[in-house]
Length: 268
Image 1 (tube, rainbow, N blue to C red):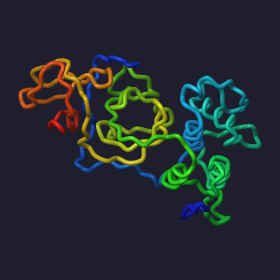
Image 2 (image 1 turned 90 degrees about the vertical axis):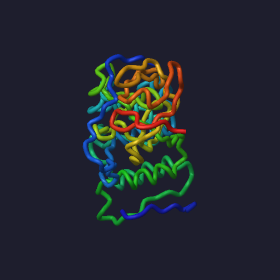
Image 3 (image 1 turned 30 degrees about the horizontal axis):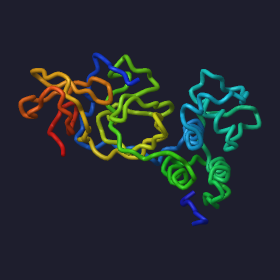
Image 4 (image 1 turned 60 degrees about the vertical axis):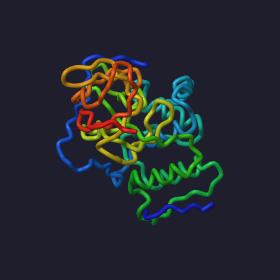
């Protein structure tokens, strides 16, 4: 279980949204990558390693599992990964999306997904049923021939902060992102996060990099007494600040450094 061997060795405009977060500690939040990854989370990553989100939505549904239907958020990803020959169900005709992915199951997937590369996990026979951690899975996933893109993003709001958002979407510095199956605790909001993306879908959150991120090209839409409303990727977001300290004018596009729902400085 300890190591991996590599043999090759819409635009929307939302009202009433606040960028204030609930971070109360000075300590930077972190993503615990020692936690297991579920079969559903893994299958979403696999599906998006082969198809774009639009292609996944357009695929005819050919799976017929006892524990999945179109109301299941993972159903379309199970269908796509099955169509690509990357996974199969269980002998009981179920997929068990909520269960942890085991080392043995991950090894089977990697053999199918590695694109001819001899990529295997090393573990003892007695450990084969143990869950694979997010950290080990991400290392393996990075090695397969996938089309995911690693980006630094800032999650600006979820549906707890903006009721106009669906629970499956977040507003981010990259626009509206699909977060199906991705847990985003309140303390992550407003932080810089290294993420894997495919189109407008989040595959995984890898690391929290800063709690004072820079948001680029924030357009000044309205200057108030206690802050500024910015247009960020088509969405209006209010940040508290002393407007006179920013020397901002209507229509300016600024790179702003933010913390806990406030603009703390301009950034180059």
